[in-house]
Each structure stands twice: as C-alpha cells, then as structure tokens.
Amino acid sequence: MRIKTIIVFLMLIATSVFFAGCIGDDDPVIEETIPVINETPEEVEIEEIPVEEPEVVEEIPAVDPQTYTIRMEHYMVRIPSPFEINRGDTVVWRNNQDPKRYLTVVSENGLWENTTLGYRQTLLYTFNESGTYNFSVIGQSRMSGSIVVN
Image (cartoon, rainbow, N blue to C red):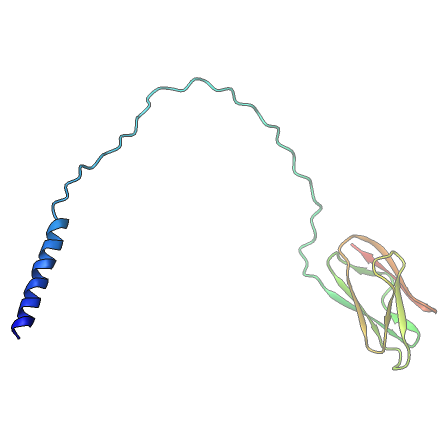
C-alpha cells in the first residue's frame, strides 16, 4: 500500500511539473499592419470591347410535344391528308398488317435508315425541324404519305 501511495505522489509531481512548463509562455504577438493608400490612381484608359449581338433563334411554340400513331394495315396507311404536326412531336409507325407480313418503312428525306417492322412492331421518330417529309413502305404504293412539320 505504501508503494502505491508513493507512485501516486510521484505521478502528481510529474504532472505538476509538466503543466508548469506550459504556463507562462509570453511570446510577443506581432501585429501585421496593412498599409492604407489614400491616393487616387492615375487615369487608366479603358478599352471598349465590342459586344456581339445574340443570334436570334426562332421560338418553338409553347405546346407540349404530342405523339401520333400511323397504323399500317389492310395495305394502307391511316393518316389525315395533309398530316400536320408541330416541331418536337413524335410519329410512331405501327405494323398492324398481319403476323406473317413484314413492312419496310423508308424516309424519302433520309431522316432514318430503312426500317423493317414485324407484326405490331413500331418505328418512332421525333421531328425537330420544320418542313415537309415523305415516307413510304417498300412494295406498297398505297402505304405512303407526307408529314408537314410547323
């Protein structure tokens, strides 16, 4: 028990000495001063930079895009003539001919590659440019039409 008391006493003295060395460090604080300039600067020549006029972009009507379906059945396409849509609208070609008949849809304006559709398969295309676009189905003279995009 006496040894424990001595060890505790020595630890208290060592702790006191340690903390006593940390107290009283009075290093002077160096304050940095920032010089204040009260002089008016000499006149500086300002170069004017020409501003380019923004390119005027034709506004797209604030109409929500629509999706229209062209049904290809009974060796005909079912669309109104003229078929008018707005920019941003999507047209879906759907083969409803018969289960054993494949139809190849062609864009005569080169908008998409010739696409062969099986029964109930679809081709989707979104028209983003105004104009008149023609399409047809290979080998079916009554399966063609025009789409006018406003």
